[in-house]
Length: 458
Image (cartoon, rainbow, N blue to C red):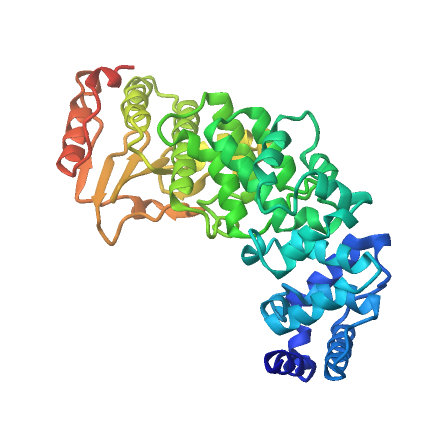
């Protein structure tokens, strides 16, 4: 009993521990989730301190807890990160023994809710609390508890694959399906529900479809008007979601319509990883790399299309048409990992018009401050090689692991920052593949495979 006395005493005499935001936030969430099932109108640290004191005093008297409300409310501290009452064996024995003697079902409901909300790893296959829940399933005959028992939610993780599969297959909102299985109120945003979500993500990553992606979006995002908040905010859930959308395409891209839709949907919820890593923090780099490669392909098309419109001179247009197939051959071979466009003054006017039709376009390029208003630049990265492809009569510059390479994803750059590499090539003899051969040879020298010459033809 010594460990339990020490634990209870430490908690009851350390009010500063009760003011942590994570715990108070959880109590608020639980009060909302319980709704009419709870007799508690408000949760606060002082209130929980009284619970601890009451339990300690009862224990010191050598009695079991008879107060139903106290038994129910103590369940909140079982797996809370501040108190971790479930990790104290002596407390658990005292607490479960008290509940076993209670005629009320409300403490059982409270523990069941906490168990599904936290889905503690050390209790999934067996433990004092999970054993208590399993041997008392015959008492769970009403409401969400009955649904949870019918779907075997207290039988370890055996229900998770079936729930995930059904959620993807049923023509219903995924949350409705989980609620039918007993995952209601605050539990819907808890760890058991997240386990079902991650299983659904895994199924989708092996067999992707637009319908499955839509289901995962409804599952993962609250999707209120103007609100794309995540239901599960930790990196495990975010990685599972991103993996489902990008992992299937690590070897071969989806068809163009699907690819554009995935890009737009991920940027809407996670922002552009080229400009802000905030929501991408903790996401595996291999998935971010796939998205950046797709965004690089879009940057190429964006650059070529806008510059095409900005060129009026017939000679320049003739020369320019050879740029598209040459660089596209490197993009199609998945050699270009990142790209960023810097538009000059003439092209910026066209880009702003495009942005007025598509808001996302405005965030996908930077401005080039140059004395020549016709010039624009496409920056590309292949491994540790940086390439600056200038429009019109500008050169192609290539850097290799140099400290003075142009920085990617800047919203504004000066023209001189994108010039002066060790290798520079003017775009001469395009019809005889003069400059193309020269650039390709330099890239080969730096370790980049040469693309087939027939792919360079306009």
